[in-house]
Each structure stands twice: as C-alpha cells, then as structure tokens.
Image (tube, rainbow, N blue to C red; front, side, top):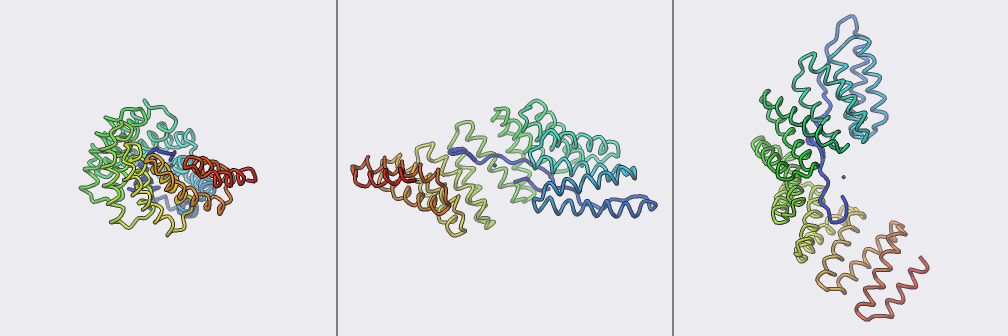
Amino acid sequence: MTLDLNPKHNLPESERDTVLPIEDSEILVPESADLNADEANRLMQLGRELHQRGELQSALSTFQKAHLLYWEMDDQKGAKQALEALGQVCYTLGEYAKAIDYSQRSLVLAQRIRQYLGSVKLLGTLGNAYRHLADHTKAIDYQKQSLTLAQELRDQRSEMAALNNLGLAYKSANNSDAAIECEKQALDIAQALQDYVAIGQILKNLGNAYYALGDFEQAIAYYEQRLELAGKLGDQRLELQVLRNLGNACNVTGNHEAAISYNLRRVKIAKASGDLRTQEQALGSLCVAHEALGQTSCAITYYQQRLELARQSQDERLESYLLGNLKAAFSMIGDYTKASEYSAQARLA
C-alpha cells in the first residue's frame, strides 16, 4: 500500500488521499480464452505503466480496452481489476463522478467474487471521491465501511489507510477533533509497521488538522517531526513542503524569526535544486516576515531577489507587483530616488 502523495499563500499543504495502487497480480482465465487473456493482461500492464508515467488519457483508453476483453470473456476478476484501475485514473484526473461510477461497478464485482481486501480499497476510493465533491456524509460513510472491513480482515495496512482517509473526510467536514483522533490511530499503526512514507504523510495531516483548529503550537510540533523524518529519508522535495508549512505557521503565530530561519533553509535547497518557483515563494515569505518585524531594508533585499527571478522566468504580472512593492518599501524608508526609479520601471513594464 502506498499513500498518495495540491497550496495557497499562508495555508498548509493540502492533504493527499490514501489511494492504494492499481493491483498487478496475475489474472487467471480459462484456457479457451488464452489469446484474449494474454492481450487483456498485456493491456493492464501497459495501462499501469502509462498511469505511473502520468500519461493518463492513454492509460484510460488502455484500461477501457482491457475491460472490454475481460467482459467479453466473462472474466469477473479481470473486469473488476480493470474497472478499479479506470476509477483510479479518473480520480487522478479529477473526474470524481466517473471515478465513483467505475469504482462502484468494480465494488459490485469484488463483493460478488469475495475479494474483500479489494473492497476495502474501493470503498476508500469512493469516500475520497465524494470528499472532493463535498458530499461529506457519503465520504464519511464509505470511509467507515472501509475501516470496518479492514478491521474485520485484520489487515493493518488497509486499516491504516482507512483511518487516514476517514480523518481527511472528517477534516473536510470541519470536524478537526474527529480527524485528529483518526490520524493518531493511523500514526500508531504506521509506526508499528515502520512505514516511513506513511508516517510522514500522517504527520502532515495531523499538523494540518491542528492548523485548522488554530492550535498552531501542535501543528508546528507535527510539522517539525515530519521535517526530521524528511531529513532522515533524504527527501528534499518533502523537506521543501514541510519548511513551507513551518514558515507559514510561524508567521501566523508571530514567531517571525523562526519563519525566517525555515524559509532561508527553503531558499537554499530550492536554489541548489534549481527550483525557481519554490525559491521565489520562499523569498516572498521572507519579505512577509521581515516586514512584520519592521525590517524594511531586509525585505527590500528579498524583493529585489524575487524581481530577478520574475524577470528570469518572464513573469510580467509578478514583476509588476514587485516593482510596486519596491516603490512602496523605498518610500517607507525615505529613499524617494529609488522609489522613483522603481516607479519608472513599473510604467515601462
């Protein structure tokens, strides 16, 4: 099982769902259908590869062809697997109504052929899709069904995934207390399994849930645990995400010095990896923190660095915005010559 790994200014990283991967087990079919079975299995494998590469429309078409072959052979296990894959691709595409349709059809087959562990995953996908459609009642109901079945099957990984998904459903319904309870249970299982990817994602969800409650101290504590884990895993992409969350949370609580520290680390990592967008965003957070501390000259330095990046990436809207901020900042410190220079640049931009 793999936890599925989208942010506005000053908000924590959006939660991801726990979506189990498309199954890759061999499908057994009658010998009389060997040729069609081989082709269907080949299409399923190709579809998985396309999905992993992000070629989603091609994956969708491929899984549809595989499903048709399984349907013609009356292979319910294969049809169930193809429908499940179609549901997951549609989910990835953000086509949640279609994801629900495919997943419900797959669920009927899974229950008919008594693939109960597959039913756990499908119930979770249905709950996640309904959450994205803001149907909180159905989202919570499907996740509860997924959790109950996982517990009956005594499958800890599925139980962990279901608890995480249920927590996300509760948070989406603005019930952060219930979300936190579910995520803590999921975290206990993840730690027992030593699933460090899952631990990192659940720590994020706990931090986000406390952030939503306005308990920034607890949010920061969970984000810091996640940051430590990212360092151990050597995952710089994850480290950048957590540093953003920590910087935002510290700015909200008025701990601007800490926010500066986190964002300086973020700039350093982003610069080393050539991530101009993240570098620019981190510089923006540094501007916010220094201005909040009344350190206008420091803010100007970071505004100028942001301006260089905006021009490098040919982002004219950002360039215009920064020229206006620089004009205002230099006026604030009484340097009207510089303010006029940036005002003239803004008129030419």
